[in-house]
Length: 309
Image 1 (spheres, rainbow, N blue to C red):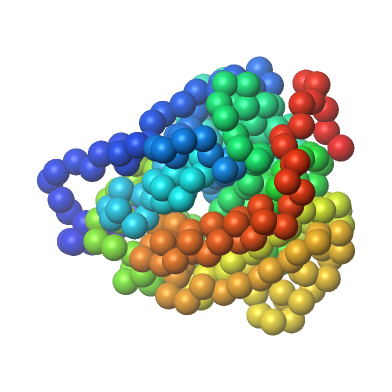
Image 2: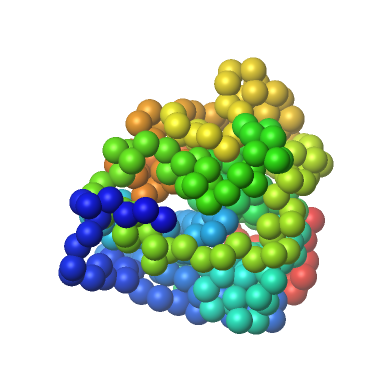
């Protein structure tokens, strides 16, 4: 990764924001690491599970170069608990499963992690998901097979790639450009700080990348919760012209709400850019709407280990 001159600072950045602390959760035989922020003045109204993309870690949602970047601190200030987990094969669990897991396998681990979290923490009305890129694939897979989740907001994930499979293997530089877009979309210091967030994509996860369009075809009709998808103005991984988005939404036949939005002045890694606060506030507003319209008795269900839809 090339680091611009404005990114070269001698003072090390903190590992996480004030009010954010590391957490470990035992789930489905794995120990998952992550970051947690809870409301300072009382129990949460609901809990947001933040799911990072491929080649990143949970710190993606707690950007350090500007106070406006962190989803965790913003969500906690607005009354939500925010739990950002390192997906299976990342963080602490990378030693246990160095080759990672498939999307289906990961989608069985996430509900177990939520069960483990709910045993020891107040979760409010239940769980909302906010996911990015490959984490969006996992979130969509999870909500298609797991009852009781309240809503999903995902960015940087579509259903048709904007580049052919051969083009997705052109090398590190092309991947960098697709992941970030124009450098001016990010605050000074971003690319140096991002080096601490990068992690290798596990082999089993990477092997499934090209399968996503077919996987989406199967799971889309099963998604039955409110869904919001955001595409950055400079999103380069996915097709997101009007006709592409119309085709995408037409497949989500069971979701009671499907909302698709574009975010100006943003690249694929929205939550690390100057538009991060705008995106996070819009996502939180969507969650507010979902909580308002959901049944007041909605709670996270108690389930037996391994239970899914």
